[in-house]
Length: 203
Length: 300
Image (cartoon, rainbow over all chains, first blue to last red; front, side, top):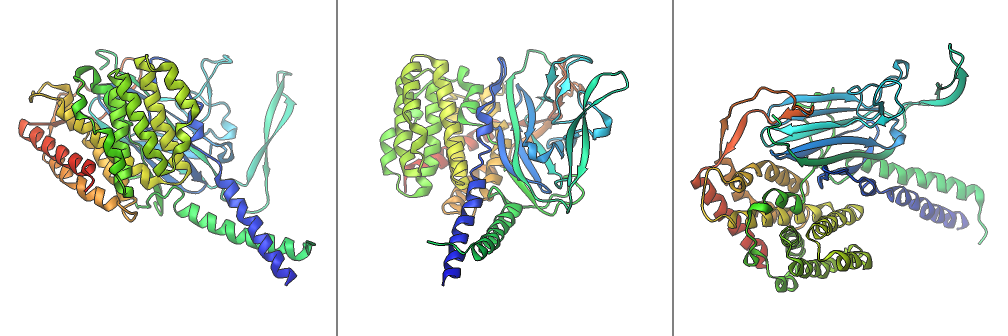
C-alpha cells in the first residue's frame, strides 16, 4: 500500500516535469527585439519550439514594394548545429543554403558563411554583426525556409586559455566527447523578419 | 507521511521516464500541432516528418500598403453591438479576427474614438476566448497616454494583435489563431475591395487584392492543418469559392531587369511572373469576398 502511495506520488511529481519544461515560451524571444528605423517589425516573425534531429518549414509570403530582412536565432542548446535553406516559391530557386556554424577547425566565420554565428564587421574590428539576409521581391512570392536541426552532438566544447604562437593569451575550445549517443534536446528557433518600403528605383 | 525512498525514487524515475517518453513522442511528431507532410522538393536528404509553420501578416501590416490611398468609411466596419450575438466558438473566433482588422483599419486612419471602441469590443470577446490577460491595466494606461497620436495607436493595434497571438500560442490554441487569422485577413480584403469605387488597371489597391493570392494560399494551408478541430472545416468550406475566384487570375510574364541583387545588396526574388487581374476577375473577387464576409459576420 505504501509502495503504491509512493508510486502515485512519484508519478504526480514527475508529471510536473514536462509541464515545467513546456513553460519555456519561445514567443517571448520576439518581445525583446526592436528594429531600428526605417526597418519595421514584421508580424509574420515566428519563434517556435524545435527538437534536435527534426526538420521544420516556415512559409513566408512577401509583398512587392517592401524590402525584407530575415535573421535567425537558435537556443544555445542546439550549439548552432542547423542547416537553413531558403527557396523562392515563385521560381523554385534556392536562394540561401548555409549551415548554422562553421566547423571549429575553420576558425572565425565571415559574412555569408553561416546563418547563426556573428562575424566581424571588418578584419580586426571588435564590432560583431549577426548574419542577416535581405530580400527584395520583384513580384509577390513566398519563401519556404527549411530548417534542419541536427542530431544533438555528443561532443561538447570546453573553453581553455592558452598561449598562441605570438605569445598572446587566447581562449581555445577543446572538444570533449561525452559517453552515449546523441540525445534529443528541445529549444527555440526564431525566424525574425523586419521590413521597410523599397527605395525608389532600387531595381 | 514517511516516504519509502527506495520505492519512491524508483517510481519517480520510472514514471518520469514514461511521461517524458510521451512528451518526447508527442514533441517529435508534432511539437506545435502543425502537420507532418512529405516534401519531395525540399533538398534535404530524407523527409520523413516535417512541421510546417505558415507565417501570416497582421491586419495592420496588410493595411500598411493601402491606408494612404483608401478613404475611411465607418460603414465598412462590423458593428460592435453584434459581438454579443456570437455564441459558438467558430463565430467568436473568426469575428475576433474581423474586429482585430476593424481596429487596425481605424488605427491606421487615425480614428481614435473608433479604435478605442473596437478595442473595447475585443476586450469583451477576449474573455470568452480566455484572453483577458492581454487587456490588462498596462494596455489601458498606454491607450490613455497615446490615444491622440495616430502612430502610437497603430503600434498599440499591432502590439495587441501580437499579444493575442502570443497568449494563444502559449495556451496551445493554434486552431483559434487560424480562425482569427481567417477572419482578420478576410475583413482586410473586404474593406480594401469595397473602398475601391471603380476598376482601373493601374490601381495599386486592386493589384494588392490580386497579390494577396499568396497569403490566401498560406492561410488555407494553415487552416487545413487543423481541419479536424471544431469549426475549421466550416471556415475552409466558406473560403473555398474565393480559391476558385483566385484561380481564374492569369499570370503574365513581365520584363525582367535581370538583377540578382539590388544596389544595396538585397537578393531579388519573385521572378518575372505577375498576377494579372481583369475587371471581370475584380468583380468576381469582390462579390465572393463580400458574400463570405456576410456569412462570417451574420451569425447564422
